[in-house]
Length: 509
Image (cartoon, rainbow, N blue to C red; front, side):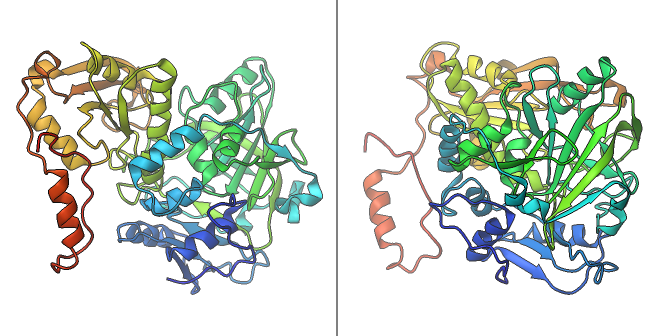
């Protein structure tokens, strides 16, 4: 794998990453960056390469330095795919942690970071790299940029699928930073698809009810942390900029837009500003989605009239492929950040005994399943945890399967989870169903589509029966003394690989 040659200086683990270029330096240092210097077509070829590379171990991020047909366009845009992907190391770097941290410890660390909020820091226009180049009015032409087509049956070209979309609440004035798909609709227009209940959609609906236009901005080339945080649900009166600052332990640099009153990421690679006029809609989609299926059939979506386009020299356009696991861009980071969000919700509610939470990345990009490990401390504790995990803000959207396991089961290890389901649950007693829950228009299991966005959830209690906790059959476990001895002798005995991590031992040995 090649080394990134961007002019930015790579940051150490103790120094917050400032932008995408510094992030790429850090990724190059762990040898997970591939650069393709030969021209490649933006029509499905880049996405196909990203899809296939994501299935490798390790799974690298890939930078296409040239696009067929755009070699001498004077812009020199580069396209980045499989940003974080299924790589736990790159996700850890994005979250400001050591690339060697395991999933459970990373979730626990991020859970603490999400409790810290730092407001963004506004900088002047000359200080903002994103303003190196600005196009206004008739000079805006999206056709001059290598906007890709991801899947054969997509309804169009989709820029910035690894993006952040910025809107302002027309009531409170707070800035929301979300992640939504956008389709090119013309030289100066882009569609904005929004699921029911999402913050930006609520802002647009409220403004349009009053007959008012609403400003919007979108970054189509950003440090992946914007995508990680922007894809989550947070309180609707606190900006995601503050949570990003908390994770970085440093305020996000923002700058006031040139045609809107919005604050945009000052270090972004490419940003558009625009306006959504009341009732302005246009047919959009379909698009290959995080479920591994095409989304809803073609339908109307809000239409953004682009009023400004800003980009750095040789901008890097970030692209998040939505696909089956492990090629789904959001799957790996969802497993970490969404798990931390749900765990934080438990802490806020004062629920004791939570030992771990994991939203498995293979379950529709991290949306479809939540596993909670707990130490049962009272009657009904597991049932309470299941019900709350299904409905807390961090976990309510779409999730279909919620599983509770005991504290001796690692929720990040599906082998252990399935073992617990097979040996500790009795389906007739331990499965409950919630109906008419919050889901998405993108759920392919709900047919006809008119049944969406309502869904259902299965609550599976895979914990030991609390009524017979003391008498439950004893599981087989290693003694700590023997494990330590074998570990110490591993290399001397010529055994392959690293010693597997074991966290539970026989206490009576």
